[in-house]
Image (cartoon, rainbow over all chains, first blue to last red; front, side, top):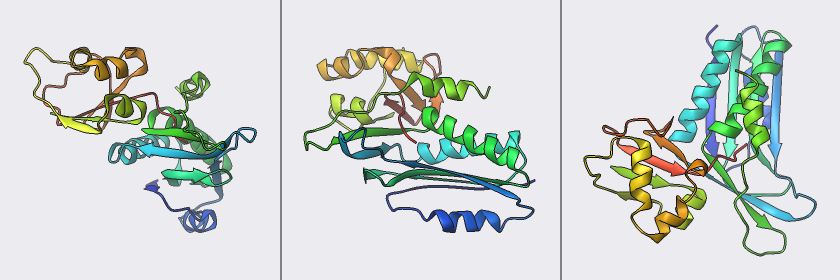
Length: 152
Length: 83
């Protein structure tokens, strides 16, 4: 099955309903799984996160991850939208959506793409504290590496 | 060769990108890292912990032993924290 892969990096918000509608319209789709990553306030400590990315490589790397998912599972479509710039608490950062004929492939592919995106796609988060002071770069979590390794 | 830097590597070096002429002896990404560290205190500060530095050669993740002889663009950055 040819998989419709859509990868976008943008500052603007995304429309979850519109993205799901596009995947539903693909042939033989019986399941769509979506993951939305949202900016947390970390117990009131943060006002926003600032997302930096490596233009060119970020698109290429996410596309490679989506293509690998399409080799592993029978997918009608994979959509990944990653926002950049300053994203306030409560707003969306990332969307991963996978569409397939059955739920197993859609669930697995969405998890796979998200786990690899976190450790392999060139994005970096800087904290904007609620106190208005200048923030630090978010440190990578070893548990994210473990999650990606779990798919090997 | 064009070098590009991101996140705290960019902040510590104090620039986003630069063009460099590499000595002929610099063959791999690891060689480049070692050579850059000796270019000044800002590089030493940014690259002090080699295990914390990720390298990409022409938009593809690389290892220390990856050859860079024909590369157009090499990127140095911290572990990624997107998603």
